[in-house]
Length: 614
Image (tube, rainbow, N blue to C red):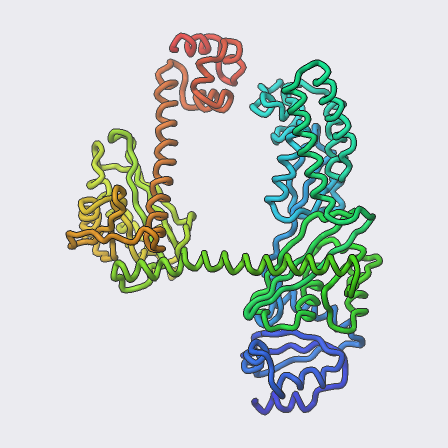
């Protein structure tokens, strides 16, 4: 402890306020105290948890901000943590908001869309929040099964009727784009959707029952069975929502699970007496922290970030005094809030359920983390050992050639960083110097071009004082994967060496998944279950997928051009207009003369030329 720090500790005041711990000028922790003198002194005397001990060992200075009351200190602490995000504070790592479903009544023929935040001033109607985008999509799919709302983003009404899409054909849309439904009838459907999402399924159930009985009386038993199945589905869906007693309750429930390293807080939303979702919040490095302190920090950070504060909040445990935190929540909400730590009864059962979910989420997190470790770090370590690489292959580049009988040859370069795809680094190459299907020469061309580009770009960035990592080709890999056997590998390696670059390279032959190394006749056979083999298979498959996708796009473009460009008067501009209107070449040639004339720039004479060329 330096003299300045010791003097500050000796002069600590008997006052509420916030303390700001620093290390070499950096703020590493912010806390509040009813009595700064007693609280701050505790950090520098006695034993602590490993996390607190590590923090204190770095502290070389601290600042104080005195407050009149403990409530002022709480508010100031929230603002300081939000502003500085100190390393040793308990922080919400995941800032994603629960998604909502939204209906905008200002639209003509309103749609059901996903919203990440609720804006109470935009005039839209919101439903939720839901626990993640997956839950939202499940609800949207259920809505589409029963209510034919449009899903397109067309600006309706259109000047000219639009041809109905596939959703109309399968009964999931009434095609307002084609003028096949009036605004009044569409509004009636929308009203049912709002009732359904608000939890009132009575009208829908009644209609399904009526349709089922009517179909049965007409002896249309298959149709009646379909109504019966829909009825079961909708009743099951609504039963899932009523996970607790149906009271007029609006509350959030928070509980915690911890292990030696981290903590997981489960936050469950209950609205209108129904569980409407929840959220598992990972608190990294908080495994040894006091549960009450963690939950207190979660409350102040979560509800300070624009989330709706309910009328009642149930918490597993909280630090005393609870009244100050309750007062802060009321101020944030601008209305009444009750903060409760249940001890028994129905509310305690909700806490137990939330704690069970928190433990399950924490266990799942560690299972997924372990799987990720095996898929990435462990796989790279195994690959380094199998190929005898000098360094851990943090950046892997994979190359694949795609063509159709030698035509439109393209090469794909994919990049994996840290064992996972880095899709922004992917690149395509059009083969320029090779005629026909010659994978050997194509690999040589691509590898040579890649490293010549990289060397030139490196030189330019060094002259400009820019980091190498920012260029398209200036970052070089730790190892290169060539999709192919020893001959493809030989051509590619020779091309790389000609540029003056020498990076480890290997080939993967698809037939028996054999790994070939330069100057080594016998291939390496990796265990089929090894993480290293799974990693390089992923790189190879990704390169193949990326190359094939680009090649198909080029092939489709060439097909369009060859089909339409031979027609006199149909240049690139009119080709584009036709494709945008009809979506495919087949649809163009199947269209009538009048339909072709609807396209901008297509006269009746040109329409006849198109039809005559079929």
